[in-house]
Amino acid sequence: MTTNRDLHSMNRDDLVAYFNAGGDVSDLLREATTGPDLGPTPETIPMIVTGVRLPSEVVRQLDQLAGNDKGGRSGLIRQAIDEFLERHAGEAA
Image (cartoon, rainbow, N blue to C red):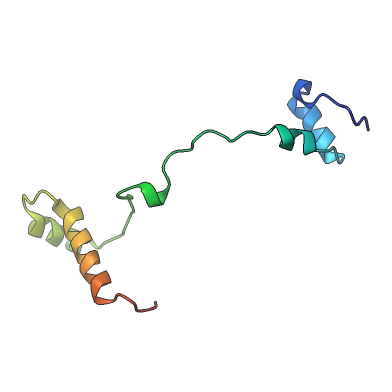
């Protein structure tokens, strides 16, 4: 195997063959730069959308309770979860 290959001029198939044959990645790693920002992490997002399966009767009752409330169904569910977490703070699952 040639040790002084120009990895930048190789196509995908040549690179795969080169690395599968034990080619040295140190030159690529030395030249590596930080990749693009992939966006916010869960810790930086104020709210994350999650799906929950609820019986249709429960959803109907939530909608009835929410009425014209600005928070709606989601607001009621968030409030219930907040109250639950507060009651059970410090407990292990």
